[in-house]
Image (tube, rainbow, N blue to C red; front, side, top):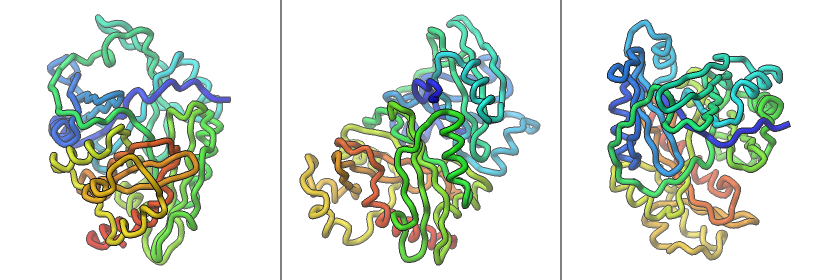
Length: 358
């Protein structure tokens, strides 16, 4: 039985310097800064900046004191995603049901209030040291209690929503976490890829996507597969120390405009392998976008039985080769770019070799 998860309410990053991280995402990705919580608002423990573009809400949080336990998280993992929060109708009921189904509680249900109203929240643990927060808004008018409006406009690049969130887990742990999302949150298996689908001469991985019934929330879960050299997933695990969120896929309705703007802003993307466009159009067939412009911007294209998609992946957004962002446009396709897996892996292996981690 599926728990009623309305949408991804926000994704919270734990970072070493939230002020600088917020500036980067404003300037590079065009997010608006919309709210803040910290010492100036009466919250002396941590500083958090809220950014928004379309229906994408990101929170960047930094601990302010040496004895905050979140410093241990940062030391182990570096900057990364700590919390994928869901908006729900009844936070206490969903938390209790999730725990009854086998989840570990991270924080029991609590109420938080300010002059904008009251919000109920609770947390459970998931893979690695990532948590899920259940947020019951109850008509609350702001972002969350304790946050003050702080508007700094960014120059939006056309990003509209979170298409999916990808987690990397340890070898032979993917099926266990797929079962966990099924049994605890009621998210069904949507599609699976094995090491025959996602491999090159050197490396491989396996992946299964779980999703809510309405497909508004989709979580691909990856694990490394045996290969001649170290998988990109194992490289992530080594640098993150444990399982964690590998990337956010952010949707756009105009990927040509979005990628052009992001490149102007200095965002670095993975390079499409040489020769990719020599044969891709014979496989993909007709698309609405200009072929030459797609090639100039280095965008990947794939098609399935329901339509096509265009996608491109950034390089890691911090010095550890862990978290990155995918930009995706869907034209009917509900898949994840299976036809681009090999091209993507070749490029990632080239990056791994430069880092000495292949």
